Length: 224
Image (cartoon, helix red, strand yellow):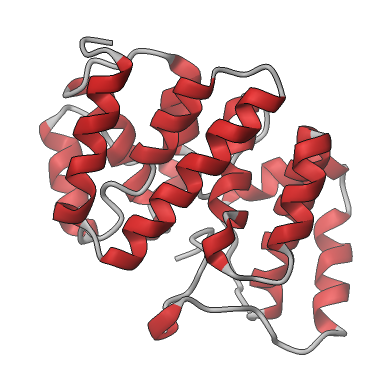
């Protein structure tokens, strides 16, 4: 990293209110706190986890066309898996910002930022941790969050599986026809073949009751 940890934290924290709504600032700070805390409990680097939390939604409120242009200006491209899912492009843009403008080279940190919305098969433990924190930080105020965090504090892998299953189940209850390929790979890796069908059966038998953010914005970004 070209800047030390305190300088990066200050820079990213100061940037938050200039690029996002106050509610999202609170979400980012919540993710940062949960990520750093879980990292400390499970032998991962709390500083990397905190930076991932501060970075993950830095470009969330930027329009997709602008994200594409900015990535192309950095000689980056939208991943083939992402082409039909513009709501996840902010992760790739944040990772590019970290790499090109902040000098961050840690592969697991960059991956955790890029994949925080979806995870993937063979993702790093830090990516699993940031995925959990993004889904279940206390500001989300969803019923499942406290249980996911309780499980994750004791067993990170179990908390990740619970977060992944709950998140995809929510989307299925919402009637989403398209789920991101990375999320599907992650689900199959975590549970084996057939888990998506099981979740679909469960969703069909349950009422639509997934939570939304204030203002009705959808909470998850696994699909377009």
